Length: 299
Image (cartoon, rainbow, N blue to C red; front, side):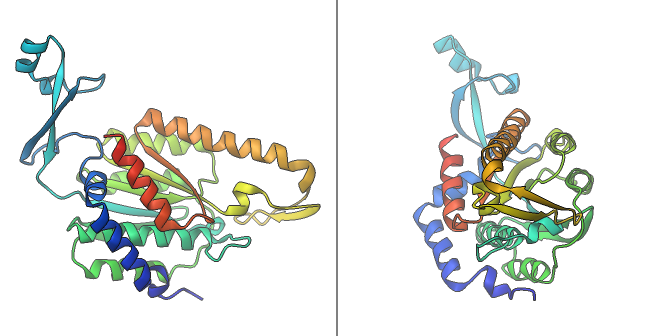
């Protein structure tokens, strides 16, 4: 049974997000408009501040007057006088339906987080759209900034039943092909697939000038492995079953999980992608707040 739209963005959640917006408006603004401190080509911009020149900066942005005075290279930071267009890109494959003892499945958690981000963007008058995938994109909404967009996004998501296998890389390549203008691409997935093609797809998005945030959502049990004795596990997308001695496997499993996350963390760092590891035991509004704060402190 699909959850009602109100389940994903309850009035008390809206009030909590509204308090976040009022209490830390600079955080939201920094999140939506300061992602990579670079001007949007083709739009009017206004000067913001100076910062030290770093590898990868455009030499055309060096302030030579400051250099003449200080003998040091500084670049001008600019702030675009235009809205950011965001897209919520959500994995709805069968593995996203998993929950062990949490109220929310991984997909429920992704939708709740996406709803909050959609609300924030629309509240800031930034267009927000939706793309949904498993083995390929199978539903989408164009980006709009009107208030009714939140309900439309959630109406699509509330009707979705997680099923099938996932092909994250193929879906992200489709996303890159569909986007005509620089956008903020927010991806929500458990990433339970071969990382190498995903890395290449993320690089394609970055090469085309898009900002990317990768929300890596795992179930609390997938992170902590709270199992004892002999346990039968079922692979959600293929149906294969495996009986495991949980006590004997715990240490190796947790080491493999940490390596899996660290590989994604390193890969995303090199690609200029924000990597946000989450699990379903974390309150999504708190997780969002912590991410926004950490994002802001880096710029």
